[in-house]
Length: 337
Image (cartoon, rainbow, N blue to C red):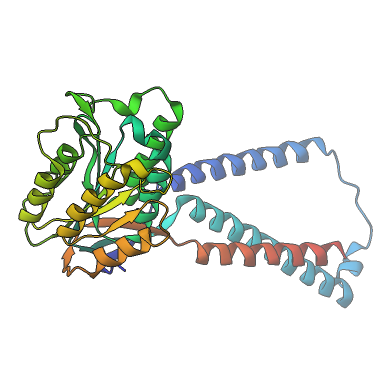
């Protein structure tokens, strides 16, 4: 799991302009209320005098009832003010703001996907596999390269997992549309499923940072058509020279495709010679096996870029609003009695 260091924190208002806006609204409402009361009094006419009213108001019971009534009115007013003030402060959104520097793991992983015609039936399942892989990693940088006759970087090395997930969804939509949009940039050259060129291209997508663990997850049925610049063996040797481990997932390794077994054997030999591991796509151990082996490689924590984190702090104002509402309900109920 990643750890993070909180540099400093403070509390600020997200929408400070709400305070003067509410003051204007309250002032306008108060002015309208005062004007309404004045007009009501003018239209009320002469009052009717009552003889000996002072005897009634001098009674102890009357004075006690009047005092209780005034207290209830004061509680009503205080509750209303409390609810209004809490509402105003809630709309201004007080939030704690902190600068956080997360620790990232210095592993880089390039997902290398064959999107040739023979892979069409598998590509959506493969993307699901890649999505599962991405969910298992924390802090590692991930890139996706797709290849056919030529290779295209679908997205470069990044640790932004929301972005990675969005790119997988986008490519899945392209596959589902079946309009060939996902072939863009991968048909430059003569041939199809040129695995050696694809693997070599993926090996060159890493930064020149030898202290970082580097891995390629290569998914192909290894059904090569045409003459690649790099054979699979040459591309494997290039990966080994650069200290890159290659993990292979082969959708074509099934009993129903005996004619691909020779390719699968050669593919497996190249993969395992790099220190990686080979899996058929349907192998349930593929995902946990690849994750376990990649995370077992030594990696030191490095400081990631500073990130701003905001966390709403509404608890105090919600509590005040609740107290104000409780006071309003209780006082209103007592006044009615």
